[in-house]
Every structure is written in structure tokens, then in C-alpha cells.
Length: 431
Image (cartoon, rainbow, N blue to C red):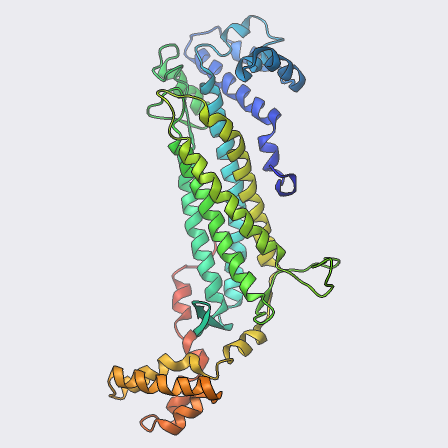
């Protein structure tokens, strides 16, 4: 993981020491399960816990000797144990420990991600409420369409992040599986009852059927969910990048005191945070293809997935965590220029009200085709001459009186159903 994007407490979750501690947690849970079933001497698990060794230097020495990290771990962990060492890693294969411990790590990582997503949801809801009545121009194809509210833009982001939270909660369940089923998953050397008890101790559930591993479709779904969350963040960042363009300038990402925008041009205030988020979203999507390919392993398993997972799980969880933290900061400190929004809304001299004008003519009895052609001709004249569409309508449309035309060109008419849209979210954000 690139250090500049690694934040606490997520980065500590993926240290070698933390990984070895999780392996030990799994081994001790298995011993405790054996003990509860009366299959090993009472007190063995407690003695193992008391005498277990986690020593990174010793682990590295053993790994150099054995070229096998789990054997190195077992040698390190049991190096100061007595007779209880006989029951450490008893009946297990490496993947029983590795995969179950990985699930512990991913569940914890998911909890940290959900915690940050909750903060983002809270910020989004607050921003959406604040700007519920803030008029702005809606754009389709990058071109002015019709007036809307800036709050509705934000509410759209909020709704997507709510969906992402639902997906994450489901993904958490998908990765909450462990396996203590032996070399090819048939429980030949470890009873299913041991697995059930051990995983209960660890807060996991047994995968209904395993090979030597927990199948990687579980993990691929989790990584895809993280990438989808990153895509939602990218959508927010892309919108802000556009709205911060000099000729638009409706919002601006925070620019702190002492910050510099360019080594050459002192005036620059660039949307560097939003651009960074867009770049990291590309990285997040790249992990999905690796996770999908990891699902296809030979027979009961090979280890072609192992090397790839040493990259994608720590990096994916740390990257999305960083993105969430920075998006919260971005939106908490977003500068919103309401006056500029109104100025931009009026740039086209009323062209954005063309649909309302057409519909009013239809309501007066004109055919749709006739109404469309009339309003289009007036609009084209407006484009060419810079005249106001409202004034052109007053001069050229006799079936509408002045009061009716004034109402058609009132931008607040476009917000008349905003309250109903907001009401679909109940009382708003609740963790």
C-alpha cells in the first residue's frame, strides 16, 4: 500500500504482526473447541494462550528455513509451549488458519469502512437539507436543461450511498465464513463439531461446503462491492470537478491556508482532492478483475490466488477507507456559491423554460407538434439574437396572458415537488 493513502486504524489491520495474531486467535479457538468436546486435556487452550510466542524476527528466521509461512508460524508460536503444543494445529491444514483469519480481517475492515460510510451519509444528508431550496441549473449532456435544486443533486448522492451501505452489509455476511475442515474439506481429521464451536468463538459461521479453502466468490463479491462504493465517490468528485471549472464555479473544494495550487501560477486553486479520488476509483475497479480470476482454482485448490490477495485485500480496504475519509472532509468543507448558481441559471436568457412554455400551449388547446415548433422557433431566435425567451413569448404568443407567462418563467416552480422527494427518505439519516 502507498503510505500516503494508508490511514489508521485500517493500516494496522494488515501488518504482519496483526496477521500472526489472527492466526493465533484461530488456533486457540480450535483448541478451545477440542477441549469443550473432551478431545484434548482440559486447560490445554489456556496454557497455549499463556505460552504462545509472537516474535516477528523468530518468524522470519523460521520462514527462511522452511519456506512455508504457516509451518514457520507454528514453530514460532509453540517455541515456548510444553505438552500443550501437541494439540496446536491439530488436524488442521494451512488454509483452515489462513482463510478463517482472513475472514476475521475482512469483517473488521468492513466494519471500519461502514463506520466511515455512516459519517459520509450524515454529511450528505445535512448538505442535502441545507440546499433543498438552492436553485441551480440541471445539465444533461453537459448542456443546460432545466432548473433544479442543488440539494437534490446531493440527495441523489445520498441515495446511492444508502444503497452502498445495504450492499456492504450483505457483503459483510458474505465474508463472515470460516472453515476448519481439513486438507480437502471433508473433515477427515477434524470433526465438524470442532469447526462449529471454533467459529462460534470467533464470531464466524461455517461455510456449508468447502474444499481446502473458503471459495473465492465470497471475496470477489466483497471486492466488487468496494469498487462500486468507490464508483459512487468518483461520481461525486466528478460533479464537483465540473462545477469548480472557472467558467462554472458553482462549488469549490476546500483550499486550506498555506496550500499551493501550482508551482508556476500563484493564482491556481485546483480540485486536486476530487481528481485524486477519481484516480483511486480506477485502482479500486482494477482489483475486481483480480478477485474474479481468483475464484478459478485447480481442483480443491491451488495457491495462485494467494500472492494476488496479499495485494488486493490490504490495498482495496485501505484505499476505500482513505477515499471515504477524504470525501467526508471534502463535503464537510465544500464551498457553495449560490449567487453563481443563479447567474449560470440565467445564462441562456430563459431557454431553459422551453418545455414549460410548450406544455402551457398544449394546455391551451394547441397540438403538441404545433406547440413544439413554435417554441423551438422562438428558442432559435433567442439563441441567435440574445433576446429573452420570456419577452419573445409575450410578444408572439397571444393565447397566454402576461401573468401566465411570468409563472412559466419562475424557476421556483421547478421545486414544487422537492418536499415530496425528500419525504421518501423518512426522517433522514439515522445510523
